[in-house]
Amino acid sequence: MKKLLLSALASLGFLAPMAPTQVNADAYIGQLMNVGYGFCPRTWTEASGQILAISSNQTLFSLLGTTYGGDGRTSFGLPDLRSRNPVHVGSGPGVNNVT
Image (cartoon, rainbow, N blue to C red; front, side, top):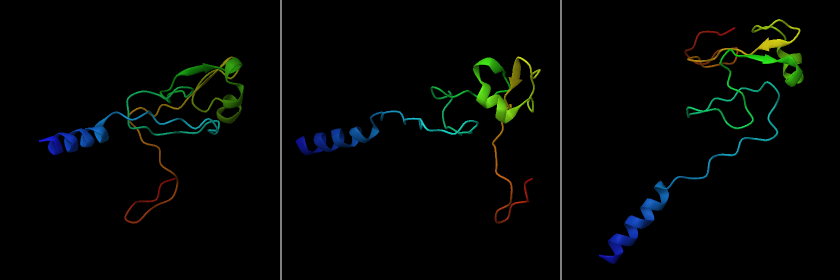
């Protein structure tokens, strides 16, 4: 009985919640990251089409400009990737070319 209890406890140790993955502190400005959970990691901003102030995001604005909205003087927009999955240009085996 003790052996069964010990093996059950040992297997439960593998099911215990693990520490959340640390988000890379050296992420690139404008980098996209797909996650498998329903919240945005700390220090990241969800790409859900929101408008941001240029004054507090000057570096990101210099990369995106007004491509996704905003007036270009005080605000700019982020892409809206809700219900979408970003892909890289090119193609793969059995996949149509993406541009």
